[in-house]
Image 1 (cartoon, rainbow, N blue to C red):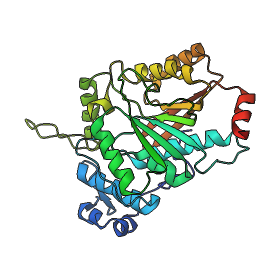
Image 2 (image 1 turned 120 degrees about the vertical axis):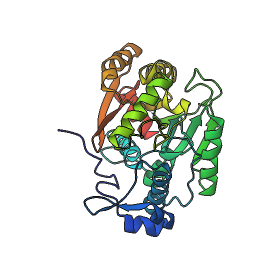
Image 3 (image 1 turned 180 degrees about the vertical axis):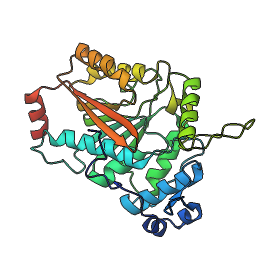
Image 4 (image 1 turned 90 degrees about the vertical axis):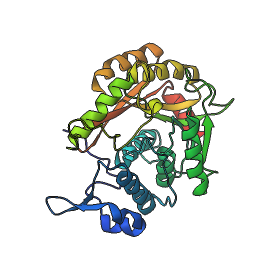
Length: 310
């Protein structure tokens, strides 16, 4: 059976545009009528997608101020929320089935991005505290502006990652512990592969450019560090697995999104080689898109219990 959105996801059906425009009047300028008579927006219009996100964050998560620099990745909120709900269930498995809430739960978001989306959603839904790391100085500055504008500085800390070849080192401080780490890795292995992926998405939106015209930017955007890295997501997550072993006692559950199903077997093999005690793979879906996140821990049952009671 195909996965569906998580039961706690706030966006299970069509968007209520009347409610969203009340929360964000600017959205009204982007509303269109679909062939079947429904109200929607043009998902090929980057400005419309950014404004929809602004409305969703205001209406459903109490985020009054959210802006995104042009060209940076504009995250689809339902899918991003699903990842957080899945991680909440993972923690609940060690908490007698009850999702732990509040600032005692600390989460590290590797590559927080200009949108700061995971800390915003995770704090709004569960009250968790976040540290977001980022290598792109412009993205980090944009994320800091969002955090400050919404008065969330006590709940969300943002840190510059100084080394391109490290993920945890340089960010995790001495003696610091996290219940969860999460990551939306660069999926593509090259700029050309990222551009091809963008063209496929435009074809799916039925927005192919006219002959002789330049392909417009992808509606959800994305800079180089957000979209691709040498070796793509398999190499990136593989590096994360290798480095995570150095922090085995300081993190309860590590995790990462994995977009491409063909990478699963190799990643599971690397986790076994690294000595992971438990590995979970959680399927996710948004519309026709199928995805998953993979989570692993180096702690045994007794260590998880000691972590919980502590």
